[in-house]
Length: 217
Image 1 (cartoon, helix red, strand yellow):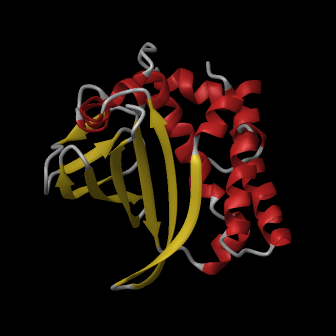
Image 2 (image 1 turned 30 degrees about the horizontal axis):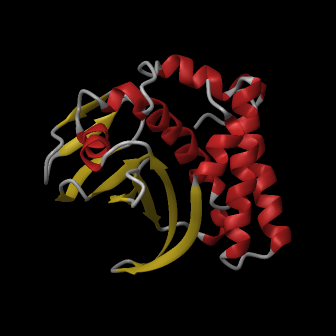
Protein backbone atom coordinates (compact mmCIF):
# COMPACT_ATOMS: atom_id res chain seq x y z
CA UNK A 1 0.00 0.00 0.00
CA UNK A 2 2.74 2.46 0.97
CA UNK A 3 6.45 2.77 1.54
CA UNK A 4 6.26 2.60 5.34
CA UNK A 5 9.68 4.06 6.11
CA UNK A 6 9.29 6.86 3.58
CA UNK A 7 5.92 7.89 5.00
CA UNK A 8 7.12 7.77 8.61
CA UNK A 9 10.18 9.87 7.77
CA UNK A 10 8.18 12.40 5.72
CA UNK A 11 6.08 13.45 8.72
CA UNK A 12 6.99 15.96 11.43
CA UNK A 13 5.54 15.44 14.91
CA UNK A 14 5.58 17.66 18.00
CA UNK A 15 3.92 18.00 21.40
CA UNK A 16 3.07 21.21 23.25
CA UNK A 17 0.44 22.95 25.35
CA UNK A 18 -2.02 25.82 25.24
CA UNK A 19 -3.96 27.73 27.87
CA UNK A 20 -7.69 27.75 27.09
CA UNK A 21 -10.61 29.20 29.05
CA UNK A 22 -11.17 25.82 30.68
CA UNK A 23 -7.49 25.51 31.61
CA UNK A 24 -4.30 24.12 30.14
CA UNK A 25 -4.66 21.77 27.18
CA UNK A 26 -2.19 19.47 25.48
CA UNK A 27 -1.41 19.93 21.79
CA UNK A 28 -0.23 17.44 19.23
CA UNK A 29 0.93 18.63 15.80
CA UNK A 30 1.52 16.51 12.71
CA UNK A 31 2.61 17.83 9.32
CA UNK A 32 3.72 16.67 5.90
CA UNK A 33 4.66 18.44 2.65
CA UNK A 34 2.92 17.23 -0.50
CA UNK A 35 3.75 17.50 -4.20
CA UNK A 36 0.63 19.58 -4.86
CA UNK A 37 -0.25 23.25 -5.01
CA UNK A 38 -2.04 25.11 -2.23
CA UNK A 39 -5.45 25.17 -3.91
CA UNK A 40 -5.38 21.44 -4.62
CA UNK A 41 -4.52 20.51 -1.03
CA UNK A 42 -7.17 22.92 0.27
CA UNK A 43 -9.77 21.34 -2.00
CA UNK A 44 -8.75 17.82 -0.92
CA UNK A 45 -9.24 18.81 2.73
CA UNK A 46 -12.51 20.73 2.35
CA UNK A 47 -14.41 19.29 -0.62
CA UNK A 48 -17.16 16.98 0.66
CA UNK A 49 -16.79 14.82 -2.45
CA UNK A 50 -13.00 14.43 -2.17
CA UNK A 51 -12.62 13.85 1.59
CA UNK A 52 -14.12 10.31 1.45
CA UNK A 53 -11.57 9.37 -1.22
CA UNK A 54 -8.74 9.58 1.30
CA UNK A 55 -10.25 9.70 4.81
CA UNK A 56 -13.84 8.74 5.70
CA UNK A 57 -17.36 9.37 4.38
CA UNK A 58 -18.53 12.73 5.71
CA UNK A 59 -21.90 14.43 5.91
CA UNK A 60 -23.12 17.86 6.95
CA UNK A 61 -22.35 21.41 5.87
CA UNK A 62 -18.67 22.18 5.35
CA UNK A 63 -18.94 25.92 5.89
CA UNK A 64 -18.30 28.38 8.70
CA UNK A 65 -20.66 27.49 11.53
CA UNK A 66 -21.73 24.27 9.84
CA UNK A 67 -21.87 20.86 11.47
CA UNK A 68 -20.05 17.84 10.03
CA UNK A 69 -19.97 14.15 10.88
CA UNK A 70 -17.47 11.50 9.82
CA UNK A 71 -19.02 8.07 9.46
CA UNK A 72 -18.20 6.03 12.56
CA UNK A 73 -15.88 8.73 13.88
CA UNK A 74 -15.89 12.29 15.16
CA UNK A 75 -18.18 15.17 14.26
CA UNK A 76 -18.20 18.82 15.21
CA UNK A 77 -18.67 22.44 14.25
CA UNK A 78 -16.50 24.46 11.89
CA UNK A 79 -15.47 27.48 13.97
CA UNK A 80 -13.04 29.30 11.69
CA UNK A 81 -12.28 29.24 7.98
CA UNK A 82 -9.69 31.24 6.02
CA UNK A 83 -9.49 29.77 2.49
CA UNK A 84 -7.12 28.46 1.26
CA UNK A 85 -4.88 28.74 4.31
CA UNK A 86 -6.60 27.34 7.40
CA UNK A 87 -9.68 26.17 9.21
CA UNK A 88 -10.54 25.17 12.76
CA UNK A 89 -13.28 22.94 14.13
CA UNK A 90 -14.41 21.12 17.21
CA UNK A 91 -13.66 17.38 17.28
CA UNK A 92 -16.43 15.64 19.21
CA UNK A 93 -16.22 11.92 19.87
CA UNK A 94 -17.22 9.55 22.65
CA UNK A 95 -18.74 12.34 24.71
CA UNK A 96 -15.51 14.35 24.67
CA UNK A 97 -14.82 17.62 22.85
CA UNK A 98 -11.41 18.65 21.58
CA UNK A 99 -10.35 20.92 18.72
CA UNK A 100 -8.45 20.65 15.47
CA UNK A 101 -6.73 23.34 13.44
CA UNK A 102 -5.53 22.69 9.89
CA UNK A 103 -2.99 25.04 8.32
CA UNK A 104 -1.66 24.94 4.76
CA UNK A 105 1.56 26.70 3.75
CA UNK A 106 3.16 26.88 0.30
CA UNK A 107 6.85 25.96 0.31
CA UNK A 108 9.60 27.37 -1.91
CA UNK A 109 10.00 24.12 -3.85
CA UNK A 110 6.37 24.23 -5.01
CA UNK A 111 5.06 21.76 -2.47
CA UNK A 112 2.37 22.53 0.10
CA UNK A 113 2.79 21.74 3.78
CA UNK A 114 -0.25 20.33 5.53
CA UNK A 115 -0.21 20.83 9.30
CA UNK A 116 -2.83 19.58 11.73
CA UNK A 117 -2.86 20.55 15.40
CA UNK A 118 -5.11 18.62 17.79
CA UNK A 119 -5.84 20.43 21.05
CA UNK A 120 -7.39 18.52 23.94
CA UNK A 121 -7.81 18.47 27.70
CA UNK A 122 -6.24 15.13 28.65
CA UNK A 123 -6.09 14.08 32.29
CA UNK A 124 -2.67 13.23 33.65
CA UNK A 125 -3.53 9.57 34.28
CA UNK A 126 -4.57 8.96 30.67
CA UNK A 127 -1.50 10.80 29.37
CA UNK A 128 0.83 8.79 31.60
CA UNK A 129 -0.85 5.56 30.52
CA UNK A 130 -0.78 6.06 26.74
CA UNK A 131 1.04 9.30 25.92
CA UNK A 132 0.60 11.19 22.63
CA UNK A 133 0.53 8.02 20.55
CA UNK A 134 -3.07 7.35 21.59
CA UNK A 135 -4.11 10.13 19.20
CA UNK A 136 -0.94 10.55 17.17
CA UNK A 137 -0.88 7.07 15.64
CA UNK A 138 -4.45 7.57 14.47
CA UNK A 139 -3.54 10.83 12.74
CA UNK A 140 -0.47 9.19 11.21
CA UNK A 141 -2.75 6.51 9.78
CA UNK A 142 -5.23 9.14 8.61
CA UNK A 143 -2.83 11.24 6.58
CA UNK A 144 -1.52 8.20 4.73
CA UNK A 145 -4.71 8.50 2.72
CA UNK A 146 -4.05 12.15 1.92
CA UNK A 147 -0.54 11.35 0.75
CA UNK A 148 -1.85 8.62 -1.53
CA UNK A 149 -4.74 10.75 -2.81
CA UNK A 150 -2.54 13.69 -3.72
CA UNK A 151 -0.15 11.35 -5.52
CA UNK A 152 -2.97 10.21 -7.79
CA UNK A 153 -3.72 6.86 -6.15
CA UNK A 154 -7.25 5.40 -6.33
CA UNK A 155 -9.77 6.25 -3.63
CA UNK A 156 -9.20 4.60 -0.26
CA UNK A 157 -11.83 2.00 0.70
CA UNK A 158 -12.51 2.34 4.47
CA UNK A 159 -12.81 -1.43 4.92
CA UNK A 160 -9.56 -2.07 3.09
CA UNK A 161 -7.87 0.67 5.12
CA UNK A 162 -9.04 -0.90 8.39
CA UNK A 163 -7.79 -4.32 7.27
CA UNK A 164 -4.43 -2.83 6.26
CA UNK A 165 -3.91 -1.45 9.77
CA UNK A 166 -3.72 -5.01 11.11
CA UNK A 167 -1.66 -6.36 8.21
CA UNK A 168 2.06 -6.99 8.61
CA UNK A 169 2.77 -3.67 6.89
CA UNK A 170 0.16 -1.81 8.92
CA UNK A 171 1.47 -3.17 12.22
CA UNK A 172 5.02 -2.17 11.27
CA UNK A 173 3.74 1.31 10.48
CA UNK A 174 1.95 1.63 13.84
CA UNK A 175 5.07 0.51 15.71
CA UNK A 176 7.26 3.07 13.94
CA UNK A 177 4.67 5.81 14.45
CA UNK A 178 4.51 4.97 18.16
CA UNK A 179 8.30 5.24 18.41
CA UNK A 180 8.27 8.67 16.76
CA UNK A 181 5.54 9.95 19.08
CA UNK A 182 7.55 8.58 22.00
CA UNK A 183 10.55 10.57 20.76
CA UNK A 184 8.40 13.72 20.42
CA UNK A 185 7.16 13.22 23.97
CA UNK A 186 10.72 12.88 25.31
CA UNK A 187 11.74 15.99 23.39
CA UNK A 188 8.83 17.83 25.05
CA UNK A 189 10.21 16.92 28.48
CA UNK A 190 8.65 13.55 29.38
CA UNK A 191 10.86 11.17 31.33
CA UNK A 192 12.29 8.70 28.77
CA UNK A 193 11.33 5.62 30.79
CA UNK A 194 7.76 6.85 31.24
CA UNK A 195 7.48 7.80 27.57
CA UNK A 196 8.74 4.37 26.50
CA UNK A 197 6.31 2.54 28.80
CA UNK A 198 3.39 4.58 27.45
CA UNK A 199 4.50 3.91 23.88
CA UNK A 200 4.66 0.16 24.54
CA UNK A 201 1.09 0.19 25.86
CA UNK A 202 -0.32 2.22 23.00
CA UNK A 203 1.55 0.10 20.43
CA UNK A 204 -0.12 -3.00 21.87
CA UNK A 205 -3.51 -1.30 21.60
CA UNK A 206 -3.05 -0.43 17.93
CA UNK A 207 -1.52 -3.73 16.86
CA UNK A 208 -3.69 -6.29 18.71
CA UNK A 209 -6.80 -7.47 16.83
CA UNK A 210 -10.03 -6.75 18.78
CA UNK A 211 -10.94 -10.45 18.94
CA UNK A 212 -7.69 -11.05 20.84
CA UNK A 213 -8.65 -8.73 23.64
CA UNK A 214 -7.77 -5.20 22.61
CA UNK A 215 -10.50 -2.65 23.40
CA UNK A 216 -12.25 -1.32 20.29
CA UNK A 217 -11.41 2.26 19.34
